[in-house]
Length: 183
Image 1 (cartoon, one colour):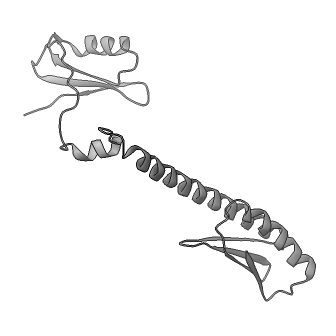
Image 2 (cartoon, rainbow, N blue to C red; image 1 turned 180 degrees about the horizontal axis):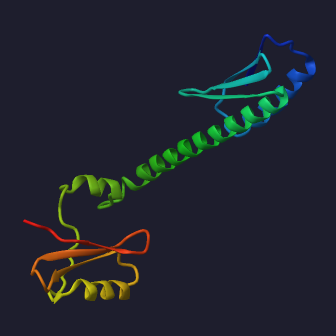
Image 3 (cartoon, rainbow, N blue to C red; image 1 turned 90 degrees about the vertical axis):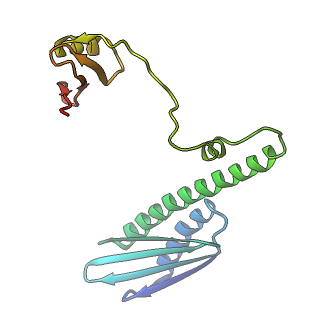
């Protein structure tokens, strides 16, 4: 990998160049498709700004950090670039695995990937139907029944007073809400 170090308003010494090379060479091992790297060291008043740009085949990764200490800026920019390179490597790896799996399984008769099965179906179909008894109850009874159901967040019931269909639900603050439609 080619590493270019540029100093703006900053004198570059050998120790600083060696430090940058040491930090950037570690990152090269994370993602082997990096062919060029630019490191721009800049000084503005009391701030030391470091910008690291990795050039890849189809992408580029840019990490920019600033702090009063140039070495801290280099470390922070390297960590930021490391996170981005790991994320990119994970995306590329998962995409490759999907493509290899598709190629292998395309020869198997009758096999469709879940997303292909989902795309081929007509959208808007009813997948699941729940049937419940239309037993009239008061809102207090519905609240008690909702408390008995552990993982349910809401309950649809017929109000014994009005004869309308109502919904009672658990709120985030621990209270209950009641929806009464008016037509």
